[in-house]
Length: 254
Image 1 (cartoon, rainbow, N blue to C red):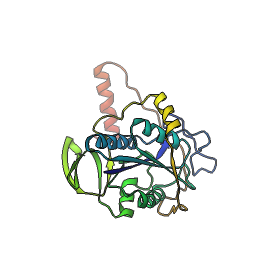
Image 2 (image 1 turned 90 degrees about the vertical axis):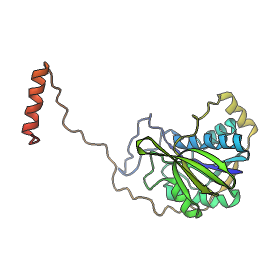
Image 3 (image 1 turned 90 degrees about the horizontal axis):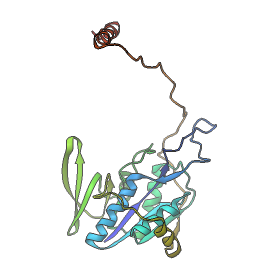
Image 4 (image 1 turned 60 degrees about the vertical axis):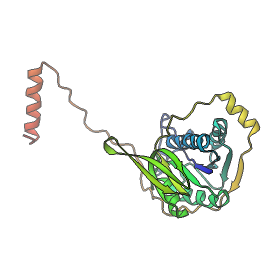
């Protein structure tokens, strides 16, 4: 079985994000990029499937800064092939452009199954998985938390609101949006990553000129304006209750 995982890098929200001088974009000068967390779960789910069912796992990522580290880390965990798409990628490339570039790369890989994270915190024009499925004319199931093979099909475990779990059968090839892997992403020591950097070769593939149509046009970005501060009510229970009733009455709630 040929399993492909497509990954994207997102801004690290631990770092303070600043708006560029044009007021329409994020300042990327010192921005640190990390792998999208659900994509990390997609890698783990792919490795679990490989260990349980056999096959090979290929990880594909866009040629932006720090993608090499992501691919080498995946190799240290147990993935087999690693493709870096080179082209005019940048930090703010939209998902429509990424999906088209990934879909074009699939013609050479010929996957039986494509896994990707169900969402990312910088998805401004829709999630990557459904867009890829549309361009590849494949079925898509999102919010997946488990995958099992059954002949030429797979059984997908999917979470619904209210704690409900459902199982769906889908014909392959298909695109799956992984919410969480069956087990947490495995830890890999830095020494193993460094070893992978010496022994694993990344396959660089040139991506056609990106078609960025379909993405949003940002007219303005700004920090939220400060509102009035909350009133902290102090005192004993009776005085606090009286003050709350007074606030509700003056607000026309009562």
